Length: 107
Image (cartoon, rainbow, N blue to C red):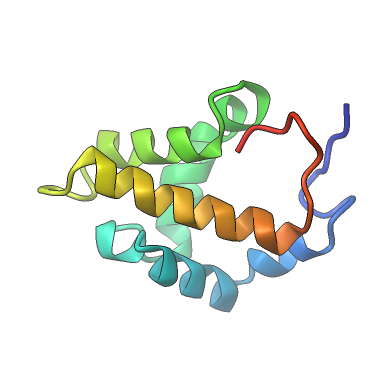
């Protein structure tokens, strides 16, 4: 098992989290249009409450992010499909930015 504490193995992870990179990724993935438009909302509203489940279970980051956005009501009128698709695009961007991820790491 390999643990990457946001930069221990991949120096790109902290770079992705820089404000300018994060805001761009939120916009380009479609999350900003769904109400996840600032680093504060992302970190405090999405990542913080889902960190343990997303990083220690097989559910994966995509699903916990989508479920959290729906639970917060950040995207009223949007379908679960649209929210899930935007969360998936964001996570894919993050994982691509980090480089290759070892097999078995939930996405």
